[in-house]
Length: 364
Image (cartoon, rainbow, N blue to C red):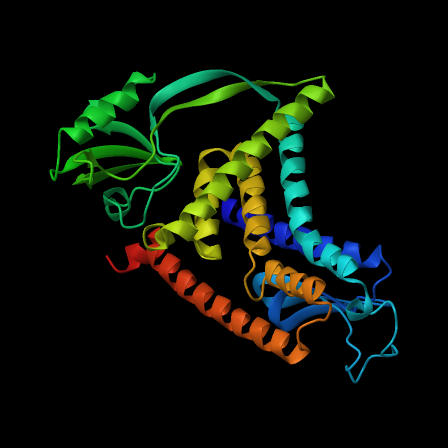
């Protein structure tokens, strides 16, 4: 059930992104002839009066299609002012950036819904164990041992970790006193308990590490708020925190790609991470949804081919030079970028599939 919930979340975020482009065009009176979720062969379609709506076989994104003056099936004159390519640069920039804006607004709305329905956080209620919110690298000792984000360490070397922040230091002390030596861990993952062994590596600073973040385990207590301003403030603070941390992550990826690239996940990896979070606490689907929505927004605004940012880069060149780049050049760049992204996506999907527990159990 949690897998279906996560897949539904990703499909919803793709829909929100494409809906942003669609509405930005329609509200400006720009012709739109296709609205598609997914790529490849059409599984289902509906022909509206002005737009074809479709679901396609490859659920790796979506697109909003605009009629072009050279299309053989278009009924619009080449100089029609409501064709996208005939609109001023600013109008086209609004359409191209609307998907990103929609994802950011939706992420904020998710937090508003969370704090309205679940309540605003109050006191932190500690629980036994130490939480692992993030595994820093897929090549770290923790990842190689099978530790995943969302796991809770209940015991280390047969020493139970009780409630409280001091358990984090207890775990750190054991790790740092065991350079290149196996450390036995008892983990809780969802509803199951696992016994794993991890061998700390010595970092360049000379300290034994396993490559994870460690937080005290526990949950916040919540209370329903009757003050809408309080809810909006909590939502804004949480949105800002998620946005800043995500942007910092992308900056780290750009400046240190060789080490950070192992943290890039395919849709398969994202679904698996979301499933783990949902299994442990269904409420975590709220921040998971907001986090993926912010990631989708930042990815799409990057000035790379086949992304919204690539289209905006073309528009910037046109605004600065007074004329657009040749259409064939734009199409070649975008098609090449799309092939590269599909190839990269395929490799990431294959990598993440081999890391799934069900796949690993088959070959054990």
